[in-house]
Image (cartoon, rainbow, N blue to C red):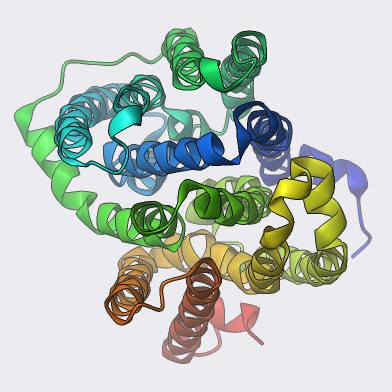
Length: 424
């Protein structure tokens, strides 16, 4: 069959991947601009405090989002023509998200007031609730589910550009560090306002939820919720635990490496998110196989080159104060190909083919293993930035092996149909 570039460009997966890639490009470019700026403006010590605050914000966001980035995406993709059902879904999600936000803020206040390690930075940590509220009021997976991801790009631009502009304008040195979460919060609240307005422009609305629908969502999303929360331990829990056990300067060195690692991973999320509704509807494993092969090849080459250039990249972005981050970054870069393979095999393929619960269980088991490793390191006095980085990569390898084993079991059960053909 002759290759048709025009047909490829018109394909819904290509269009939505392109839009989501632009969103992730913003998420990628922003850290590459903002993080070096903050590292130089705040200094190594306060940058470590900022990294600790961001770990709290990101973990709180995962809790507030519950299991909706997967559950809601599946449901909206399947029922996007049923506006009443989706309106009820949006209203129920909003109630759950706001209730979880209130719980997170209460927990944050108790933690901040009870810890002595960051006593002089309590206000900074409390202010992380402001951007958390703004992000919790956004519904990107709604637009992904109705395959209008260009709208996510539009309101993301408003939030990201405002965030960057406010931080650059307001943070001139260590004395201005409280403006970092304030500027972030204002930007995310603006993004939430634009997101809400766009929901109305496409003919949907946030309807008053029923108790039954809220209960159903809580039950249906619990597996995805625990998978997301425990899976977050591969990143945010590592920063959080190191923040409690090490000096802010050491945390800053580790966080710089890990943030670059997460930024690289983020480049692949647009493809993953665009594949989910497409695979959920059509179960086109042949297209998935071609995409997976191409992505795997590019990733291997990119990771190898990045390992060689790690010192130059860190020096250019962060300066000489972050030289100790080179070995940590190289460890993370070695795990990138495995991590990307797991991202694509997990929810886009196995989840879309009806094995989302099994994928959730794999994520939870591996994450619990990582938490056990952190606890063991803390008890034996072997907790270090390098050890945590190695534990994260080993966790990625364990997840990949488990996902491949699941895929092979599905292949065996399906015989020569469905997934079987894609794994040959």
